[in-house]
Amino acid sequence: MGGRDSFLRILCIAMTFINSAYANAQTTDATYKTGLIFASKKQFEAVPAAHLARAIRPPEVDLTSLAPAVGNQGSQNSCVGWAVGYAARTIIANKAGVGKPGPFSPSYIYNRGRTLEAASDPTNSVHDCNVGMQIETALGLLQGFGVLPIKDFPYSETECFRIPTVAEDYIAKQYVISGWGRATTREDVLQSIATQTPVIVGIKLYANFRDYRNGIYKQIAGNSVGPHALVILGYSDKKHAYRIMNSWGATKWGERGFAWVDYDTLDQMATVEGLYRAYILYPLKHD
Image 1 (cartoon, rainbow, N blue to C red):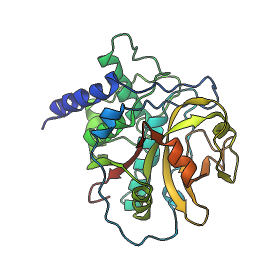
Image 2: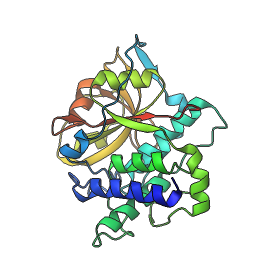
Image 3: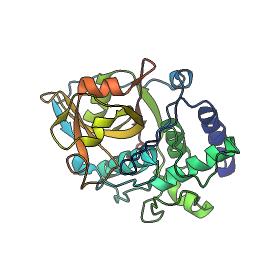
């Protein structure tokens, strides 16, 4: 299938998700922006469930050594681009160890997603970087187009309307994924991480999460401040917690941009309309 046909196919899929989004994620705190839009229950249920072979897994896994340096989305609602393109795809590439081309660009994913949103809604300006996007859209783009290294498609928190050229898309194509599915249980998430494949998660964010500095985040408190996308890149049965990577920088939030979140607490934050909003990537064979 040609590049133009692939784009149109993915455009149609993404526009279906966008047109009936569950909620737009925006927060009034300029220091910690978000940017996730949840798919509706019906749309999310249409995503195929991930099927992972069950195996005896280690009691603790940490993929931090494979992750890029924690980035900062700044004033832009681009958390999905950071979770999908920058964090998860880079970890997968580093795991493969073939040239280690990353870290990858959050803007390559986010900017194209913004273009899809503007195409589906004429009132939605492509120049408005305060609008978020769905994880489903981002994963469809990653599967259909791939992603460019951030050195070739730099991130800017103040603009989101640069679109890759045909030549850039040709380069990005070598970094596609083969597919993705939704996790249905905690064990799906843990099994994926045990195979050194990170998991993308969408959560309902609460005010006290922005105040996290260290330890294990266990107690939800404060007002809801909008949906947010993160990457789960580790777990510890002893701590009864997931290790997550955020996109709020490494100096002001968390443990240098990472956090431990209690299993039950994160599962609660990631459950929307009774469905667990976690996504498992299927890398290509060479990954």
